[in-house]
Each structure stands twice: as C-alpha cells, then as structure tokens.
Length: 357
Image 1 (cartoon, rainbow, N blue to C red):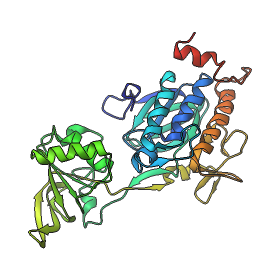
Image 2 (cartoon, rainbow, N blue to C red):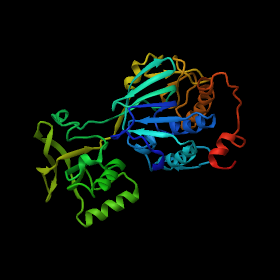
Image 3 (cartoon, rainbow, N blue to C red):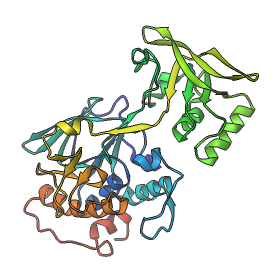
Image 4 (cartoon, rainbow, N blue to C red):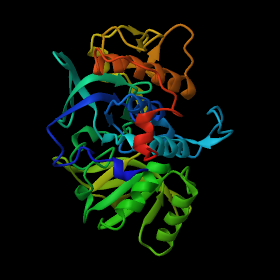
C-alpha cells in the first residue's frame, strides 16, 4: 500500500473542512481507478472509505483469492490488484480518509457538502459514489450485552492505535484483519491473545508464518475456542469467557481482556446513501449509461452500487463506468472549457505527472 498517499486518515488533527474538485466515496478497485481517470482530466480527488485501508472487498474479503477477468492479467489477487491501482493513481496525488463513513450530503451553490461520522467536512464540486454494494458494516458477535462495551473496550476497527497501548488485547478471527492486527499490536500491547475456532488461518502466508514465530517465542498467545460471554461493567471490559478444548475436555474459562477486536466479517448496507434523494432500484442507484450520473446532477455512481439495463457486476465494467464518469465530471468542474478526449499515450497531464515532459 502506498502509505505516502494517505495524508488524511481520520486521526486527530485531520482538517475540519476540506475543499476538493471531486470526492470519491469508496476506495475499492473502481474508486481507485476513478482517481486515475479523473486525474487525466486535471480533477483532484479525495477518497473516503469506512475501512482502514484501500481495496474494498478485494483487500478485505479475498486479498489472496485469484481474479481472472482483469485485462492483461490472466490471474491476479485482490491485494495485488489494489497495489497496482494505487501505483497507477499515485501521480495524481489522491488524499485518502480511512476509517470514516459518510453520514450526510447536501447540495450547495458550488456543489456539495459532505460530512463523515468523525466530523470531517468536505466541499466538492462533484461526488462519485463507488461504494460497492454500500457501506461495510462489521458483523457483531452474538454476545449478550456487547452493545454496552462497543466504542469503549470493544472495537471493530483500529482507528487510534494508542487505545490499545499497554492493554490486554484479545483478537478474534482467522483472516487477514485478525492476523494483521495481532502482528501490529503485539509490540505495543501489554499482551495479545488470538482466539479462533480452529488452528488454521485464512490469511496471507507471510502473516501466518510471522504469527507462528510469535507463538513459538511466547510473544502472542493462541486459544482455540469461541467467545461465550463478556465480563465487566460500565463499558470497561475485564475478561471474556471462552469455551473450547482443554486437555481433551470441552470447558469454559475466563481470559483477561481489556480490549476486544472481533473480526467476524462484514455485511454491506446502503446506509445513509438511501436518504440522499437519489433514484433507487432494489437498493441500488439508478444511473444513465452516457455519464453514469444519478438523478442528482453532479453525483455519479460507478461499480456494483449502480444499476442500469444490461448491468454486469464486474470490476472491468466499473473501470469503463469510471472513464465515462470522468469525462462528464470534467464539464462540471471546468464549465465552459472545451473538453478534448486524450489517449493516455498523448495526455500532457499524465506525462507531466510522470515526469516524461
């Protein structure tokens, strides 16, 4: 991941109000390619995503799963595709804002005002919704009273790493997110315990190997089992009750935990987008096929979140939609300017960014 491009990540000190040409909602493959297509027509973009990293479903749900229908790549993993798209977008210097969800959008004289759940406010001339099937919502473990601990000692994403410093951290899951945060929090936490229902992991091989090394030297503890109860009061977690095999028996026992990170996967919901007054069709945003503009001029929808006759939910289809969207967005961002389509081989804007001219 190109960390040098992530200059606005929703942490303390983030600007309260940001002005930009285009605001892209969603940092999945289609949103990342939209950065490139907008950049070709000199449109600066900021990107918001509720996840803590770019890539959307590709990076979060199947980073190691091969994808077979990307042109010129007979096979490529979700993470590799994300990395290549970030590399392609880098010349246009996008600004990313991770760990934030768009809560409100309203029309203004100069375009749109958008605000996130962290209070970051954007003023943009155009808005591009590239949120896949909608916003990602973490799956909540089926534990009684968990709502009382959420936001205080139970978290579904790491927004402020210092909240876990010198704490007894319990991480639940066997995928990339669970292992990534086990590895990242181990150096700063008082202790890190990983719990999974089996001693097998659905994560990148390198992460699994690093985890095995930490388990071998005792830096991390692994427990095979499942959570059954949270123990604590007033939002402060004290311990969790785990049920699992111990000495050949199926037992319940308590484990110290001051912070809990359950990674049980994600569900997708349209969320606040449903309240923006856009024409919807079965929870998808209706668009035209010339500009991929919604019923609200200046708001575009590309990728899986949109619908139109003949729609195919393919990444390559989203790339096509991003290209036509950018041409239409240019007419809004630069009204009155004669729009001349340029191939990338002759794009002076791209060549300047790449240092060719």
